[in-house]
Image: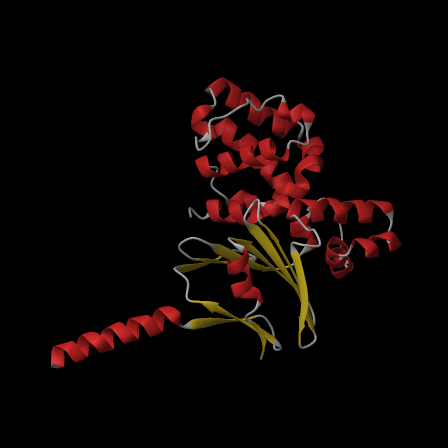
Length: 167
Length: 106
């Protein structure tokens, strides 16, 4: 009887630990609750969180990492907004509009592949391209823009996007 | 890949992703991702001349390409990097996470 009880307790504790969500603190205002991964790897400017069959990578959106040859300093938010909102491109110079349009195409941004919502004051933009099974989440936080690349399905992207929470 | 080929590949990727590439190992995964980036973007006609097609699905481009052709491919993308990165910069943004994973051996 005692052994059975032990086995049940061990099983329950294993289940609880695997279903437990970890917290990634983005700022004083935001955090992400994410499922416990297989491993986490920290690079010079990014964090990779790896699961058995999908991965996400977080970094602060830095235009110098984005296009080393093009300086978009100061217009990062406008650039992301222009990728997701084709109408907003018309107010920008031609090169800026073309750059954001081409990048939007590469990310697979269409009216059907995107989502946009707010958590507190933070604006969130997401895109998932079914063909390449990849997605992006852009989070307009108070001081910076976070970029999260997802190598996985729409459901896996939503696991992250829908668990962005206020602190 | 020999030493020269690794250097050609690194020079090209530095132009595309910046100085952080200097710390990346130039391994089979990185080569295959570069090949995929070039082949799948299909945007640089000059670059596409060195991409043999069709390639059987699932094979490693590094192993499939003949050594001589691999060398020409790497030399060409390195010598014309300023021109080529313009064609593939958008696709490259979409593949950055895959390169980061490969650089860490995942």
